[in-house]
Image (spheres, rainbow, N blue to C red):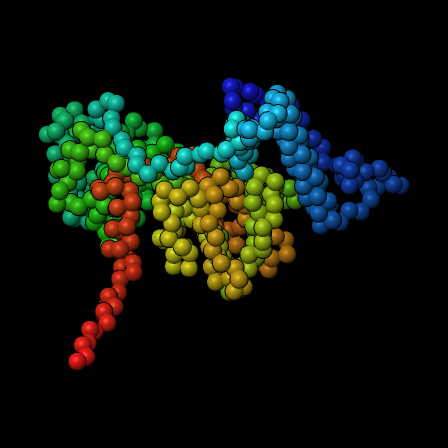
Length: 454
């Protein structure tokens, strides 16, 4: 159905099977290539090759998907066609206006129509270079996440909890249940232990991270959807994502609570795994949905031979290429400085709206890393012709095996991570790549010596 609201055009598609609507199971009779029950011959069913039937079923699915895409294109064309067209200036002193239909690769997202009357496309910067956060209501709940079995982090957690209590006597400090063992008898009275898996349901205003980049990634994994703003203090060996120093934590917390501090909005990835069932069709497992901050990796796992993957793009599932090598990485701009960088990918500014696609040891010298728009929809599939299965992981965790026919759908999540900045998004980023990676560090070239001749 096509829904118009002002200048917005919303297109949604839903597919319901008769079996799902009725709640009944249909008998499993052998069917022919048109999906109709086969006729009996001499009292028995004709012999059917399961592989051939699976290929025919896959072909029927592709034809159905192509029909859906064609129907959507028809709806879009009709929506533009119905809009009135004005008469052009006879003196040709003005450009002809036009309309832009803005669509996304992601199925189900709204389409937007913009009218350009003067024929000149004027779009301001898509990314905001400065994002500031100011509280509408004074925050009252803080979550402190620290690295386990770290005495220094435990000490700083106690000091920060006491400081927050002095600043706001009604401030509640939530902590993870396993941290209680590290605290021992030093639990502050405003601390409340909570189960890590249930923190996403709490009304938390902001998060304090005490540790390295891994601690921040762990904090993000606890909130697959909306995540509170994060204040990350540098306590790890690298600290690329942690701009604040512990020596000045009182001033930092005062600024967080009272001023409009600048933040960086870091995109995340949403990944869905679709598995092929015994009948040869693809069935989506709604429970297998993952969110990651850095990257999703599909590789060969424990197998010695290279992995083979089909890479598709867009809602139309257009074939891009066949990946042959150790694997492939799809990373966010934040993850561009992690595994993707080690595999030869480029460093991307965190405000860049895109994803980095980086092959791992590809079996082709021309297969180079690329950057795609954040509206791009990607899908990786293990083809039936692949020699082995593949393995997928998210931020280095939750490794799962992908068998023949299984798919991994990748898109930019609608729930980014907001992290406080010390000096500003761009300034903190350049300071991090120079301090952590010694970016472009070298001895300056000596100037030419000046000689005089007499």
